[in-house]
Image (cartoon, rainbow, N blue to C red):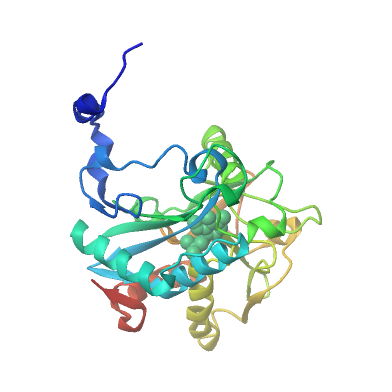
Length: 321
Ligand SMILES: Cc1ncc(COP(=O)(O)O)c(C=O)c1O
């Protein structure tokens, strides 16, 4: 076994360089007390309970044309998630916001994604959160994915997931313990579809691996599952606000939350997938059968266009950096 000493460490890291690193722009680490821009230096201590217990919370937002979109709802959700697991960043949300914007400036990219991770922090290899004396903050800025409909204008294929739905207490907290979500994504890849969606024990639709789902019913109601059992998606909530315009234009009859059954999905005119990276995705097939006429529907297409415009041009929701 090769023993790597501190003096050899940088040279060892140098050998780790990989093409994927080109997509990693900057990382702030409270453990280091600063920002690194060299991807091989983007490291987390192994005794941070984040690593070996998934003990932490996170949030991810998107930046377009040097503006962070909908930053406040993302930061507030991070704060709520942290509070739900009794994790408090001593500097408060203002310091997290300042450090996030500074990291974005160091990264210097007009279009990118940022993930803010608040971790229990280094302390031990135990499970007790009390063994980590202070939380750790990691902020990473990396290349954004392309919104789904720009890549796949024909729409997405979706199947029902077999992964048990998370209990409400954990589904509503954006915690770093994403194993059920990982297994859902694996299902989607293995089955050759774009997304899978969960149904709870009562038979109601929940959410996808990292996205919310909604339906447009035959009577023209845009319905999203209640936020008691799914993550309170920032995109879903903004899309619901934007959809008010479609109600005025009579493209939709109403917008709201409700219980969505499997039969509702099968008979829906439109099935929509929404999330930060994706924007609004129109689904063309569910469990192998066409949704509506098997083509992207009018509400989904309009909402996607409205959201793209909002991300780029709504100065009230953009934090320039
Ligand atoms: C489980 C889950 N549901 C829904 C979402 C969508 O949330 P948002 O629109 O805020 O990105 C995410 C985002 O990553 C998620 O992880």
